[in-house]
Length: 100
Image 1: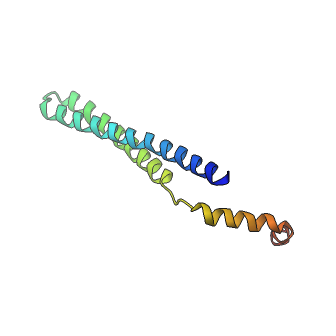
Image 2: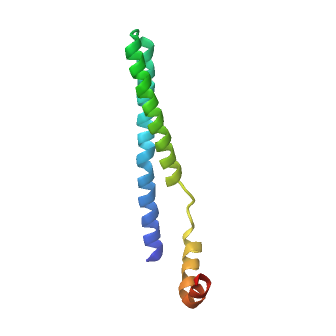
Image 3: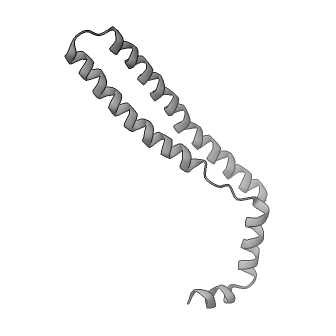
């Protein structure tokens, strides 16, 4: 039962991690599109507006990359985590002594 719950939680975490990854791809596509538009633009104001938008997208890209890195953090194996939890629950007095 615990292993099933653990696996379900891992599946939810992997699905949650896909969203920032997809957003990262969309941001990169927008940046590429704006860079192409800059090459075709001749008005300095338009070029400046495109550059500002690219700067904002680059900032969003960095934030999204941080989200991707955080969501792909270290995964603990079920066996080790379950064993640690059982040891802790087997002797709560020892845990209480070490925390007080």
